[in-house]
Image 1: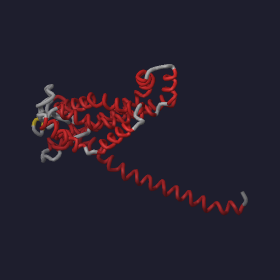
Image 2: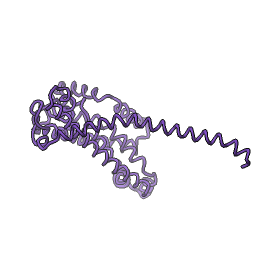
Image 3: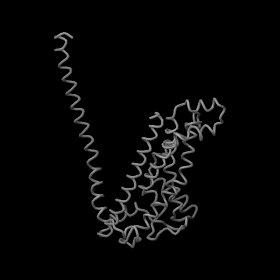
Length: 292
């Protein structure tokens, strides 16, 4: 490059560098605008919640606006566990169908319905379940109504993430199995499913995190109870942690605020642990797909 060409390129190079610096500054500012409120919320929940957590929180039930959170903790696990039991088989089955056999019009319809369901506000699902199950079927506020509602909410996420986990696997896996004469069900469950299992489990964990943090649909279906769940599926309300956060923080009493922050702290810890586990499984799934 001649001297004249270098002199002509120098202003362009300086302009590109200046534009790059401005881009980085704007990126950092945008990140801080997003991260600062989140960190402030997490810091408040961590400091106020950790100070409110005590052994009594895990051993005693809620008594009005005081007491512990044993009933809410048990109820949260019952509702979220029930949602997984009901939702995972349907969601995984739908995801397998979409990935392996859903290339036609019906598969496109299923994808469309799943995408629509993920965009519906959860409180709308709660109101639908209130009309159909709490009132229509006469179950009243109950664990089963709440678990079914949460299952309806997480099934689309599980289906789409399962489809993604299966679609990331190389086509040669299926082709080699079919070439050896293996039937479709053996190809799916013996050849394709094992390497896709980490991705499927990741989908289930993310669905669990979503269900643990939900409040709106449970207000209409699960109600609230100060007592530990007795094992009845219907005609008995059940407690859960997010209700404590939503309801008790509005009470003008320090004991209610302490319970609300303790419940928020527990929910954040559970969701954080689930997301970390899902991230680790997702990394393992990607390593399996790439052969790393």
